[in-house]
Length: 182
Image (tube, rainbow, N blue to C red; front, top):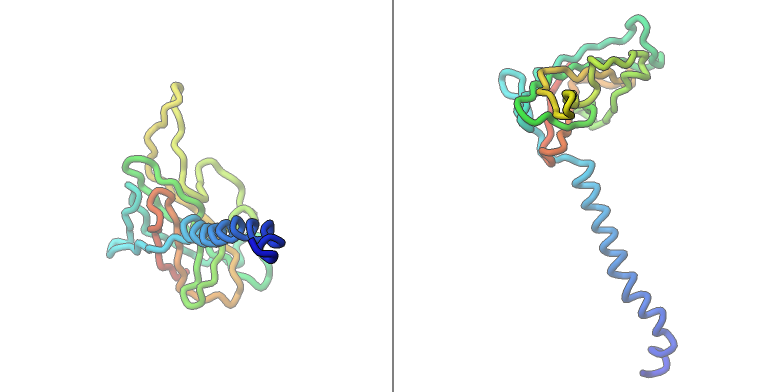
């Protein structure tokens, strides 16, 4: 080896190892974000307002402007939007996080603030997909129809229509999406 190669052999070896690792990390992070956080195929409701996804029927969704409701804790320059999503599982219960509210015209997104609004926790009301209860042997009991009920605090300038989006884990990259105008 000539002088330059010999003097820089440690740095060149490190470069040979770190360059592919860096490239793989950057690509891996991009794909992880795509697959873990960004469902990409919306399933919009049919004429009856329902969507079938993950062996369950979702909808029809109801939304109401609750601004000024008694007992709600919200900033003065905001609106409160309540959403109810009926879920009727037919087999394996769906697994989902809480619905996201999206302003259709701008793409602004809001997560539910149900408990921040002053609503009390209730085991009969759900803010995400329900889990089945178990019998005395630890076997899951059949899960009947239920509703996901959530509240959102949005800026006063937020205008409908909105989308209510729910990502169901086993159906990725599909997600249910309902258009609402409270």
